[in-house]
Amino acid sequence: MTTAEQAAPRTPSPSEDAQLLRDLAPHLHPFQRADTAPGLADFIGSARLVLIGEASHGTHEFYLERARLTRHLIVEHGCTAVVAEADWPDALRVDRYVRGRSDDVDAEAALAGFERFPTWMWRNTVMREFVEWLREHNSRVGASHQVGFFGMDLYSMYTSLRAVIAHLDSVDPQAAARARARYACFDHRAGEDSQAYGYGAAFGAVPSCEDEAIDQLMEMNRRAGATLGADRDEAFYAQQNARLVRNAEEYYRTLFGSRVSSWNLRDTHMVQTLAALDKHLQTTRGAAPRMAVWAHNSHLGDASATEMGRLGEFNVGQLARERWGRDAVLIGLSTYHGSVTAASEWDGPAERKRVRDALPGSFERLLHDSGHARLWLPLRGEGEVARLLHQERLQRAIGVIYQPETERQSHYFHTRLPGQFDALLHIDRTHALQPLVPERHWHEGEGEVPETWPSGL
Image (cartoon, rainbow, N blue to C red; front, side):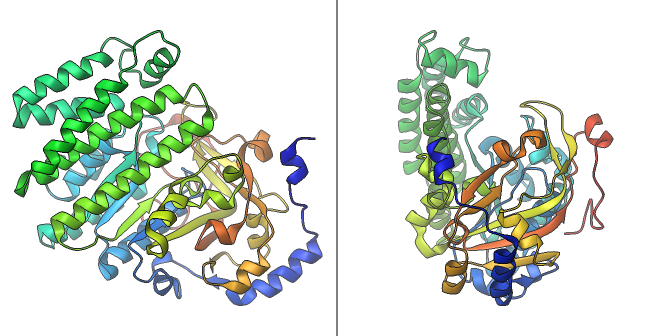
């Protein structure tokens, strides 16, 4: 028996869970829509970072309710930026569209930059509607009050280095020449395949480009610090691309070593991006910004309260709490069953798959047994809830791959819910997210169409 199996908590009996639900009943708040959920907006209060998760990358209701809640934060609470688990250059194309600064004819065109697997993660019907709404909102306010859309992930190494050079070509050809010379290290190494570069650099088949990436970032830092006025945004965007190249170079080399190290590097980069945006928006707008942060529960729920933390991993939620304290509110989402858009293997086609009923002993099963179709549960500041839910339970996580045949091993881990999130929204039955990119396997798959699909913001 492994150490993890020895340490695994026992599964509560049905009678124990029934009593637990009776004790929890005063804290379970039914809702219809996240933006009108009783007490939720007051619970979020004046937090400057509202981190809104998802238990899968392919669930319609998770995207829809997150968008609804974010719209409310923008209109009623002055949210100034949406920051997603997305690549910086692709998200920046969306940002230019929603601020009326691009030639894209509509939201679907603006989202077309998301070409890397999984395309459905950001190219879907809910995102299309949210992006159009955000553009309309921004058209009615002054430039200093427009809401931006940014990415905080680090997969776009080659796209970002090209963006650095393109920016410098437009403002300083000599600096562009220096960038080309440095980034030439990446040329002909792997045909712009970041993982192939990382594999080669990790095992000495090609030279590491770490020094060149660091040198270019240092130059971009100096340039951004000296840039004033209307050009400051573009200098910052280029600086972020250079930071991404530097961090992605290390990430892809580490990918072929310790899994924990690569995970920690990625989430550290995300928090660095949030911190840089926080500083930049405060400098350019003269007030501390409020940001809605969109990512998977596994990134936004505090890892120190989960099985991940025992393995040495940390994440965005944990680092955000350490950096911003109570100014960061962590909101998780969960479901009991339904359907999901996911692949069967990495880089595979999108499929519409049935999501199995959650396992006994999981938080999802416990909340299902409450009988509520939708509920939200406050966790932070609720001493009674923390006491009642002190015991670890299973929690399900579906990423871009769903393997129901190995459900327990592939998609569950143990967590202490009151330490992981400040609040949890549970939607008992959910449906597959509809991709914008035609997917034959998706249309052949299982699942039902929700009443609000494909719109309903």
